Image (tube, rainbow, N blue to C red):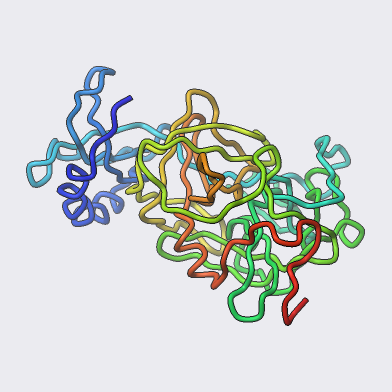
Amino acid sequence: MSYLDENARAVIRPIKRMVEDEFLARPGVIGVDIGEKVTGGRPTGKAAIVVYVCAKGPDHPEQIPVEVGGVPTDVVAESIVLHRARLTRASDDHPVAAERHSVLRGGIGIGPARSFRVVPPEVERAGEYVIAGTLGAFAVTRDDRKVLGLTTFHVGCVDDSWAVGDGFVHPSRVDGGVPGADEVAVLDRAALAGAVSAAGLRMGPRPFRAEVLDIGAITGSAPAEIGSSVRKRGRTTELTYGVIESTDATVRLDFGDGIGVRTLRDQIRVHSSERFGDHGDSGAVLVDADNRVVGLYVAGSGSTGFANPIEPVLRQLDVELLTPGVPETRRPGPAA
């Protein structure tokens, strides 16, 4: 696998930004990125503006020009979906067998204690549903030093009826968690703008460690680097590996009724030789070889994953990552 150098990307980036909103407005277009042009199934070594179009569905994109400003385009059929767990009817009595941890870490399942009214066409039958996602890592608020668990907006808030103080359970209700008895956190803050779909959950009395399950202690944060290897530990696919192929992806994602389609920019695109993520993995953190967090996983399709860069997440939530200090309890602070 070859990777475009930063000089090539720097030349293409302003041209991509100039045309991406126009392309995204066309029916069937779901993303615009920078990558290597592929012709006849073979990489050409040429840098291109990559246009993702729906792999399935009734929308057919208008003709994409073969080049823009002297830069070739490459149209790729893709299906990019948010990877919170598939909606499950709240009345179901057959939860998935789930991990249950007495000491919380990143990489484990979590979900709202409340259920959600969902109607067609998002589901076949209208009803009350529950969801699951992943608790990615822990952070500390910069002002009053509260410890928060990081996940995505679409796991932490779900729809437009969210409120600060909403309860969260581990395991999730999808996985058999019980409101009250299994509550571990409450919603403290959230952000959905620019490059960020994120939420911070204020942790309760359950002990926790500043670690990611199967990965180890978090050492800090770092910018994503193209060509570097990353790992993520999610509720559904557990520990998976990939390589960062882009930090320039712009994607349109359907957040469902009440919020609708939103555009996330400057996303990290990861490729894996196997499945990188699936429904329920949203909220997992991408970790580099030095156990630094580089991204927050939000969506994907099989071997391809997309993640928020971690620095805008921390900035918009006004937090910093928690690294080991007091390993099994809260770091002391004014709000402890």
